[in-house]
Image (tube, rainbow, N blue to C red; front, side):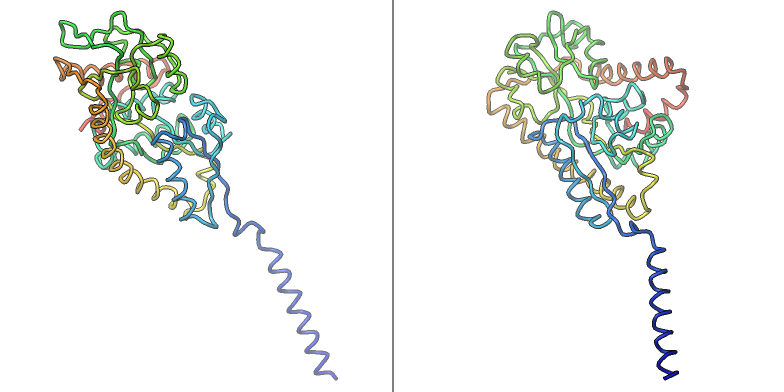
Length: 337
């Protein structure tokens, strides 16, 4: 009987110890971290498709560890999205760098890039922008997923060229955008700031009769029905990238951080290859549809002005914010290769 009593005592003691042990383990130790993401463009555009494909890849790779929930389009207005990430209202954003360059003027480097994503990483360009954004905007810059595509001007009528070999924008009503606004102004143009979703109606009503847009996506927006002339050479680079609220990033496990960062870096290359392919296909389709392409008489001056005007705006913004400009030359060298 004593043996049985001792055995029963040992059994109950073991059960109590195990219960105490399990109750001391945090209940959320294996919980999946939920993240939210916003995006700026309509779902039918390739940039949004790329963004959502990257989300799907992260969710698959991080199953049980992290999961990104995509908020509906326009749940936060496009120019309010990056500040919302900075303030922690939302966790992630795939967004053009120029859309929040007022806060981080150095982001003009991405918009005007001639470097490839490999060059930008090897030269330290990505790392420089990551550190600047962490310090001044409280976000982690995960990477640039817009390499492989550029911009060009599209017009309703045949473009005119000035004696200096550049486009003559006199009398034109251009749809503007933070990405290339400084370039338009440097060539003497005036612009109407309109979101992409409002531009088709503006073209129909004659509010604008010219616009810059990426070298893919014009047909998806149906702007090619009214804009029948294109100006070359193409300029800048599509500057879509990924940012994450810094506090949220720092709160992730190393494993979760690695999943996010490594997947973004893989997509930098695959998206670049896809966008480059689509760039060629889009031009062929536009030509087949009857669009006329016109070459700027002085392409070197045109491209230099595109970059110079953006960097002048960058420096002016830095000075206004009472920030140093000593790093600008190094930044430009990293992104202009």
